[in-house]
Image (cartoon, rainbow, N blue to C red):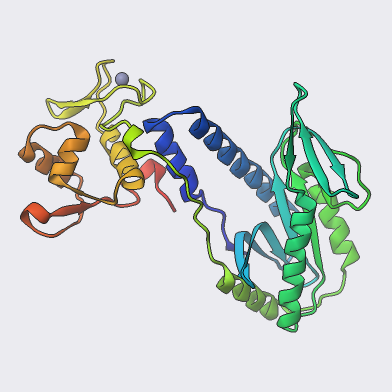
Amino acid sequence: MILLERFESLELLLLESLERRDSNEEIIDLLRRTKSGLAGERRVDTELNMCLENDYIVLRDLVLHYQTQSFQMDCLLLSPHFAFVIEVKNMTGRIEYSSEQHQFIRIRQDGTFDCFTNPIDQVRRHQTLIEQLFRKWNITLPVESAVIFASRNVILPSIQDGQMYHVTGLSYESKKLYEKHRSSYISNKQLLQLGQMLLKLHTPRIKKVSFNRARLRKGVLCSRCKWQSVMRYERGSWRCRCGVSDNTQLRIALHDYRLLWNEKISNSEFREFTKIDCADKAYYLLKKLGLDSEGKFKDKKYIIPANIWSERKRL
Ligand SMILES: [Zn+2]
């Protein structure tokens, strides 16, 4: 049973909106890394789904706060036989790892390198937390952990303890765990209770993305022009000088407005944002969108829902 699903983060949606409205290199790079991380985690999710035996509970992107510290786990598998904490990495290049120095370095093809927080230390820290919680709750269940690399284009160092491997090895390694822990320590009822207790401690964290609102491009932008052209509302449609006429682009613009400016918009703010010159026309367009509103007359604000752009709604 998947008790906690992995969702696209608000950070990812924000970065996508920012890329449309202020496509600087820093945003593009952060968006690329965020998407790559999510793709890696989903690859491991798919592989893990094929390895699960009988009764299990999976919690993805679990964030636990314990004794003033925060622990974000990419995946926690609970079974009656063991618990398994997984840290996912989706990096490419050659990894150099020294267990003595606890140093973790990635060397790119061009020879440049980056130093990272050692993910093995990180996953061991998560494992220790789960062990502490189990002790506190009087639960006897062995806890295992591993760092799993999702990309095919990574060369891993050979280490003996089997705590770091490629996603293709997950099936073999999980079989080994089931063989190592044949006994059932808890009943199915206790397994579900345990999952729910952990879920109660889950406090999702919203990563802050800083941006300069003054730099953002306003208006209904054209997707065909890679968001560089502002569309105009003419003869009942949003039109771009490239020839595109597409009313969905207004919804995308309001989706961006919601994330980067405000969840509520007045008639005058709508006109200022979309370059509509007439209050009646703005009223007509807002009414056509079927948005809920609050306040009256000049104070009236329309509430932009999370699913204003249904193809890209936040779950
Ligand atoms: Zn265009």
